[in-house]
Image: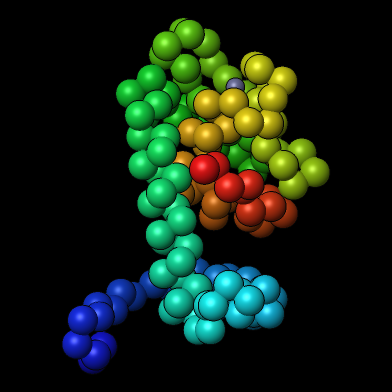
Length: 131
Ligand SMILES: [Zn+2]
């Protein structure tokens, strides 16, 4: 039972191991940020993701995810009525439509939680701060 004021969730062993490995590798960096436990690490990641999600929720009505491959995400831009192809190259996302690494499509792609799971395997770097 979690202590008062906390809730526990259940995740698959695979997911747990994946995140735990990342945590172990980044432990020293995280300690500098005041994160000293695995659950603290997950909490901070969730908070970070929520902020990004909120920031790009404004774009959401105009953006639609079409598909996610191991190194490519297709996004439909309903505002411009175009398909944006976002690829993973050298650990960085790049939008082929805009030839940019920081356009609205990239932001939208970073706001899709699945992207982290799919692209992490292929060495996607943590996104730059979007503030
Ligand atoms: Zn773009």
